[in-house]
Length: 295
Image (cartoon, rainbow, N blue to C red):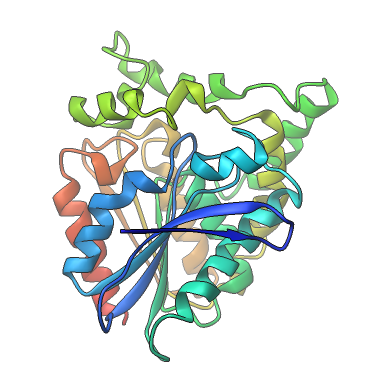
C-alpha cells in the first residue's frame, strides 16, 4: 500500500491510499463511508489486487487524514461539489499511472454510495461500472431530505454533530453489546471500528456536512438518466442505514426505469458494513466477479 496527498482545486490537502499491481486488469476507485477512512479498505483492496485489479481510496473531506485540513466532520471550501471533484481529481491521477484502455470502476460504501451516485451522474463517461454498497438514502426522497436537513441550518445547528442520526441505527439491535452493533455481526470488526481513532463517536459528521452533501445528492437522484455505465447495487437485509435493503432495491428499480444496466443483490441477515460482515468473503467474491464481467 502506498500513501499520497494532493492539494485539490479548492486548496484542501486530500489524503489517499493506493494498492498498485503490475499491468492491472482494471482500476477500482474506493469511496468510504461516514465516520471512517480509506485504511479500513485494505483487506478489500488486497482481494482486488489478487484478482488483478489496482485500487485507490480517498479520505473524504472531514474524515481520516484529510480531516486535518478541513476539520473532523466538516466539508470545507467548495461544499458538496468538492467531494465529487476530489474523487475526479483522484481518478485522473490514478488513471495517469496505468495503461490507456484499462477499465476503471467506482466502489462506494454508505456515505460513499451517496457520493458515488452523485459522481456517476456527473462523471460516468469512461467508467466501466459502479458498485454502490449500503445505499444510505431513499433515492425517491433525496431531494426532500435536503430540504429537511436545511431546517437544521435554519435552527443554527449547521456546525453541530449529527452523530445521533447514526446512533439511531442501533435501535433494531437493542439490547446491544455496543452502540455500533448495527455495523456487523462480527464482534471483532465492530471492536476494531470502535478502537480506531478515526472512526465512530470521535469523528461524527456535522449537520452542515450532510446539508452540503445533499446539495449534490438531491439533484443526482433526479438525474439518474445521466449515468452511462452499468451499476451493481448491494446491501444487507438487516442494514438499518439502508432501510433493511429497501434503499438498494429502490435505487435499482429507479436505475432500470432509466434504461441503465443494473444488478442488485441483498444479502440475508447481513448488516451495514458488507465488507466487514461474517459473509464478507461471499460479498467480495460477488463484487470481483461483477467487475471481471464488465471489464
